[in-house]
Length: 82
Length: 210
Image (cartoon, rainbow over all chains, first blue to last red; front, side, top):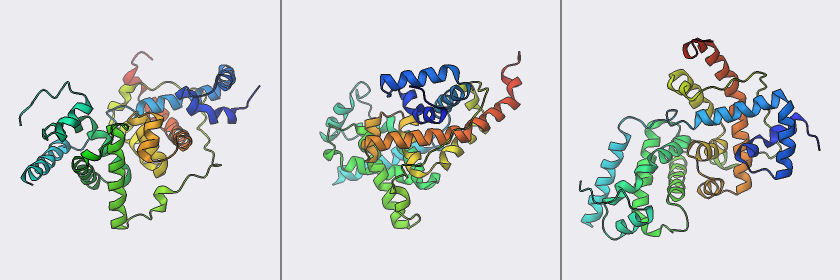
């Protein structure tokens, strides 16, 4: 089985997650071995996922935790008062 | 605050302790989940102040309803569902957004074509230290349609598995996969060229030998 680039793109996400069937994975892998464009799509997608997963991308607002735990303390006090 | 021997307790043990009257333990129980709850609230509310309100309210509700938590689901998944409900209720109350825009299923035939780049060079994680790169990443995620962004945040940012994501969003596993795929492709399409341009300009700063 041979597949074209557009079909390979449909499998990129499952390929990265390792959720393709063995048969499809082999076909995709073969294509990737000699298709520079699809390899770049795969590598850049993986790279984008790694960068967005970095803890430094989204940080909690300054003082978020303090305010949250103060609010929780109020709630706990109210609860004990009941 | 008295700090009892909570650090080594499992989530289930902490929950029983809280229900048994050691309510202070709730602080420790929620600490690991602050970021994910805030991020999901932000993905709905679109501004920091409202997102923080929703996050606080979600944690308070979680405390009040802790007795109804069923151990067969994960505490993190349960918290996310509470957060999303809280966010939806607020948006409905404010009538800021027509609700169907949040819940409409995606068009199943819609394909997203990736950006085609011949020579992709890996961008190292240190790039995230630059504010400009963080802004590109944040903006690209913010621009995703809501239903894609939620799945992407839970799967790829909070690193929940497919089943947990499906449970938290109350959607099916196939939907999680389709939405995640589209979100990743949309991000690749927008970000790959931007990141490439932004890092090439300053490559010398990182690779003085190249």
